[in-house]
Structure formats: C-alpha cells, structure tokens
Image 1 (cartoon, rainbow, N blue to C red):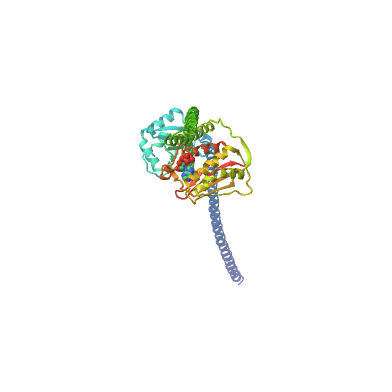
Image 2 (image 1 turned 45 degrees about the vertical axis):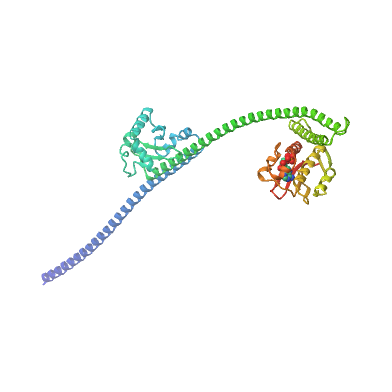
Amino acid sequence: MFAFDAINILGILSTAAIMILGLALFFKMERLKQTQELVKTLQRSLDEMDEQAKLIVRTDMELNKTQEELDKKVNGLYALQRLSRALSTTFEEEQIFQRIEADYLESLGFEHSLAFLWNEKEKKFALRMNIGYSEEEAGAILASVSANQGEYLELMSEGKTLSSLSLTDSGIKETIPKIFKTSFFVLCPLIPQEGGQGFFFVGTKKNDTVLTEGDEELITILTNHLGQALETARLFEKNWRAQQELEKKVELRTRELSLALEKVEVINRRKSDFISSVSHELRTPLTSIKGYASILLAGKLGEVPLPAKERLEKINRHSDELVTLVNDLLDIARIESGRVAMKKEQYNLREMTGKVLDILAVQLKERGIGFSQNIPSNITHIFADRPQMERVFINLINNAMKFTPANGKINVTACHTADKGIQIDITDTGSGIALEDQKKIFEEFYRVDNAINQQVKGTGLGLSLVKHIVEAHGGKIWVTSSPGCGATFSFTVPAA
Ligand code: ADP
C-alpha cells in the first residue's frame, strides 16, 4: 500500500515536474522569441542607422565638393573682375595682352594660355600673347594652327566656344590636346567688331583638374571682355589717327590761309597806294581843267559864243563829278590803309541829322519825298568822327532819295544794340534791291544792273566808302530789302 502510494505520489510529482518543466520551457521559448524579435528590431534599426550614416557621409562629401566648386567659382569671378578692370584701363592693343597675367589665369585653374589674331592683309595668324609655353613650344603651336587655319577660321566665324567639355563636333577638337599639350582646355573665338579677329586659348596639364561648364562660361566672358577691350583700343586708335590727320590738315590750311592773307594784304596795300597816287596825279590836272573852264565861262578871256559856253558848262560839271570820284577813291584808299584816323568825339545825333537834312532839304522838296526821323529821347549822343559820320548819313540819304519816286518817304530811326552801341536805320520806300545784289553793293564800283539804275547817276563808290567809315568806327553795316518794297540800310556806331 505504502509502495503503491509512493509510486502514485512519484507519478504525480514527476507529472508535476514535467508540467513545470514544460511550462518553464514554454516561457523560455516565449522569451527566446521575444529576444529574437528584439534582435531583429535592433538589426533593422542598426541597418537604418547605417544607411543614414552612409547618407550623411555622402551628403557631406557632396557638400564639400559643392563648397570646393563654389570656392573655385568665386575665385574665378574675382580673377575675372580683376582682369576686366585691368583691361578697361588701357586703350593700347599691345598693353591689353600684357594685362593678362599668369596668376589671374591660375585662379581660374589654367596655367597655359595663348592669344592669336588674324591678320587680314597678310592672311595669317599672329601670336599676340603667351603664358606658360616656351618660345619653341609657342612657335610650334602657331605653325600647327597656321597649317589648319581654315578650320580655325571656320570656328571663329561660327563664334562657338570649343572645350574639352563641349560636345561640338569639330575636326580640330581631337587634335588640340596634342598640339597645345594640355589635358583640359577652352578655346574661345575673339571677335572685336572693328576689324580683325582671333581666338583665346586656356588649358591645363593637370590631370586632376575638374573642368566644369562654369569654367567654360567664365573663359567665354573673359574672352568677350578681351574682344571689347580690343575693339575700344582700335576705335581709339582710329579716332586718334583721324584727329592727328585733321590737326595736320587744319595746320596746313591755316598756314596756306595766312600766306594767302598776307599776299592779299600786300596786293591790297599796293592797290591802295596805286589808287592814292593815281588819284593825286589826276586831281592836279582836274583842278586846272576846272579852273580854266571857269575862267573861260566867266568871260575873262573874252566873250564866249553860246555853243562853246554850253560845252564849257559840261566840262565844268563833269570835272566836278570827276573830282568827287577821285576824292572818294582817295578817301577809300586812305581809310583802307589806315592812314586816316577817325577823330571820335561825343556829339548830339539829332543835331547832326538836322544838319544833314538842311543840306538835302532842297533836293527832297524838289523830288517831292517826305522825310521823318524817330530817335527815342534816351538816345542823345554818339561817339564818332563828326565829318565822316556826316558823309555816311549824306551818302545813305542821298541814295535813298535817288531810288525813291515822288511821294515816297525816307525815315531815320535809332535804337540801342545789345552791346550798348547805337543802331541807325535809314528806310526808304524806293525800288528796293534784289537779294543777290545786297552783298555786292558794298563792293567798289558795283552798281546794280537794272533799268532804274541806268537813269540814276553814280559811280558805285558811295556805299564802299560808307562801309569803310562805319567799320573804321568798329561798327557794321547791312541792308534789308526786297525789290519794289524799298530798302533799309542799317549801321551801328559806338554810343557816347
Ligand atoms: P552809286 O554811286 O551807284 O549810288 P553806291 O555804292 O552808293 O553807288 O550804290 C551802289 C548801288 O547800290 C547803286 O548803284 C544802287 O543800285 C544800289 N543802291 C544803293 N542804295 C540804294 C537804295 N536806297 N535803294 C535801291 N538801290 C540802292
């Protein structure tokens, strides 16, 4: 019984133990599962973290690269700015290329550079700048370029930039690294509009160089600046040369003119001297002719028959006219040569016009011509040579009278000029003067060739004498007129 119980108890106990063990195992298994889940989650987190770490490293690397590129661009822009400034400070083609210094190009990442210009006259390229190549190397490059100049010219005419980056399909692209001995390069057409063109080359031998589109753009901008500087220099040179030529021409013409003027002055002096001496020589016999004619007319040598008397009177009249002409000629010659000084004094203008009117009053009345004067009260005195100024007035009013029909009018007015002188206008209602004659009437012996003038006596010396007198006073004389509508002769004189 006891054994049975013991077996039962043992059985119960072992069952219980098995159950406990089973339970324990179950829990263990559960924990193991949980742990495995945890491990998996951890693994996933670790993977994610790894991915993120990789991303961070990649981003950092990219950031560094971008930073480097940015630094390079900023340096390049600085170099470009300095170069542009250097280029804009000169107008000489030779100096423009000297301004491109090696360290500027280094900042852009290139240690080799060449500039070629096309010579249209000689039909060949010339090397204008060399940085980083020996003379022999540069000479060899020039020879290669010249051998293929057709292709380079074509590239220039297309205006396209060629670089180790660009996809331009050009025959010379493949040969450039070999000819120019560089791994990376930019070759840019140089096109100043003012004649001539060429190209600008930059390159580097460094294999670690990373040539970007930005670099290509910077070199294109630099080449444009270079082209503009060349164009400005050429325009400047052209203008400068034109100015020099103009100056030379002006100098030559001035010399020619002053020589011609000297000659004219000599001729004029001779003419005045000649007129002076001829007039003098004429005056003496004329005075005798007139004297004898007067004696004969007076009957001092016996009774003169009527027909002879009439002839003698003609001789007398013509002698008077000749004396006037000779006197006018003499006066013009004297004033022209400066031998007559104007004795300027201050005198009353109205008084003088009154005197002139007294002299001409009879003739005015005879011809039925009205006379008026309009001199404002603020104009009283003028500063001139009195007898000479009287001649001016008499001549001008006399002319006005000659060309004004009966019932016409002559008016004298005066006003102040801007430079404090006095302008006098003598206006008539006569025949007037055609435009083409207006300048010529002041020349010696010029008389207008028309029907009216043929009926009017004159020598063509009056206005010339008047002009000389007015100019000897520092004044000016001119006429405004239109045929059939009268004329106004205006002249200026110094005020008191
Ligand atoms: P002339 O002795 O012939 O008058 P002038 O030198 O005084 O010489 O004048 C030159 C010419 O100018 C005259 O022949 C005349 O044709 C013209 N002339 C001058 N004054 C007048 C005037 N007031 N009206 C029209 N024609 C004039």
